[in-house]
Length: 190
Picture 1 (cartoon, rainbow, N blue to C red):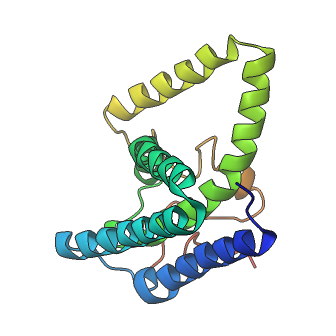
Picture 2 (cartoon, rainbow, N blue to C red):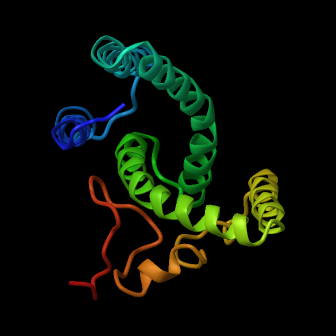
Picture 3 (tube, rainbow, N blue to C red):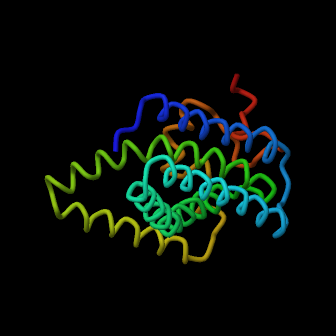
């Protein structure tokens, strides 16, 4: 099935529009969402995905429509690993519950950008070196084991975390969060 460049650009603009809507009208004010609110937003986004799939089915045919829904169900199932990663990050940085939606939105945007690069690099490495697949699995198991350890004051400090070091050298941050601001800049930062 041939998809024109205009359809691709409209799809990309639609996704960017949804992300902007989510930021400006939903997570802009920090708050702890209720179960009802989370259910409504989830149903809204699942409904949009189903309408998009129906559009593919109607305008593209049953084969592309079936492929979309198969991919959607697969990605929905695989999104559990993203929740695992976000849980690791939020617990490591001790993100307050009220700020987790905003952090999650930024995490989703970052993961959309980074995921493309990681998929390309990971697929190339696995094609060249099959044993790298086991190394990736070991890294996930070690990360899960670290989550199960009892939490100490020094064990998950944002200022000493190896994953925060590259950003910390460019943007000085405090070990605590400031309301409505992430990351919190130190007095010496500009």
